[in-house]
Length: 394
Image 1 (cartoon, rainbow, N blue to C red):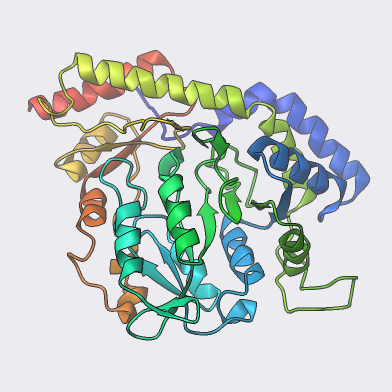
Image 2: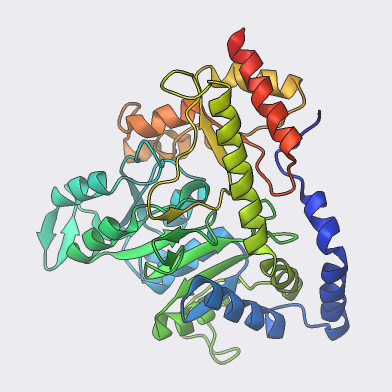
């Protein structure tokens, strides 16, 4: 069998007529930047997430940057070059990269070995070692910690209750990197509704993906809502009058129209992913491949959290050899992520070293994502599990 990691065409054929109608409507309107389609999507996303406001931007990366700028963190937002944001070293590069692009410094703490999300105990331990000065908390080298950015990795939310409590204790803002987690829940709260901001990506491979780049920021703060809208449009309000220096980061109307169609189907697609994840678990356990007796560690759904499976990620020994075996058998996989952020060449000046965050480093060596898209058939899942079983029998 030939099984892709993601089959967007299989999704598209089920909504082709709806998409064509939505796109044609935009073409006939000739309104391509922001406008009524974007405003409607913003209202629908805010309602879906359970917040008051949402602001569309050009990408998930820009969503992070715009949120930081709205908070005044980093030189790009009018803050200091010594501002810092605490986050995870195990994420897509934009998490840390756009802290840097904001003119701030990323500080890393290690992850939980079960969820691979930022470890609240590690966060508290790091912050407790800081020096308080006038209500702010500084590192030994003079960085002022302004915010924490948890990442809801793979579609499961970080442990937000202790994170929010810790952030409050240390006067920190919270930006949820929910790029992979639209629709995920922590108890009765959706991803993007608990922090000061939620940031989302509509990259095509996301559970809610456009036909190009796009992003969204969610918030409950009316002042930030107005500021975010200014920042994304060169800092202007009204047109040609610039209160601040902003960005050119406006969501296209075509993308908004497409996303509005797809948003209607998101819940059913999520259930399809969850059903496929359950099928994987059933087959892996039946084959005797799971730990402690087997060799495969499956992704776990932690109590009080609703996982939306942007990725279905195993932890396996001999990961690279297994991946080659699967590729030879027609099964596409991906490694999220092969090198933690603290070991990236561009962050040498942060003076982290191998061994500083052992859980993140182990995850980078053993993680392997399998196909889990909602159109994946039961036969295909069975083929994937049998192929993995053949590898370990050898």
